[in-house]
Image (cartoon, rainbow, N blue to C red; front, side):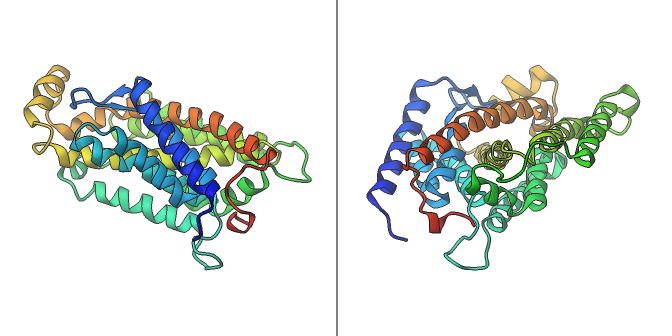
Length: 318
């Protein structure tokens, strides 16, 4: 792959932007890690992948994190937004290598799938079996939409179609949200997994409803950006979780986690802490996805209108 001066410039600008955001914008504190937080560069990383492609996006996000890393934990977590940029870029790119038959969505699904499997190789993951609900939902969205995201991303909007409601999808979305609401009721408490399933089902139901209302019109571009952003952001989340788990007793004393978080909350172990944090994680990831979508849509369309969009036509999805 030949790099143009524009590619290099965008990569450098995005790396610098991540560094500035990490340094200056307050983040969301990470449970168990003193002074560490989830920075809002997590919302920017998917945008990098969509604009300069998966590989340069990965590089920009990684360098931005490494520049500002203050300890070894920060170095390892710098790979989380990089993976987010990689997946978002792959989902908005039809082919991975030139005219090969390997599609971007296939590699994105593979990367996210491996991260989910890696969760279950840990002792924490084997005790918190249902924690990766949000991540499995993202994997299902990739498999379900396949090349649709890349196609719509290239078009910028769906041509030649007016606005109309997709009734089947609308009913499916409403049904999903009703079932999710039922799972929050006391009579579902006996089956403890149901309460954890309710949050991702609300999310999936909402996405289906939005698609049913706007999926056939120009707003499908917004949905494509949102889907790519969400899948990237949850990949970032899972890799961050894995780094955190493997850092316990290496960089993060287990006694700190026990004394400051497990005991005050009445939780028996780290696995219970992850399950306890599912609602918080859901809100965080939705917030980051919304931020990424708003800024991503605006920036991509602005760059295209000014002919500054760095991805070459032949490199974009067909």
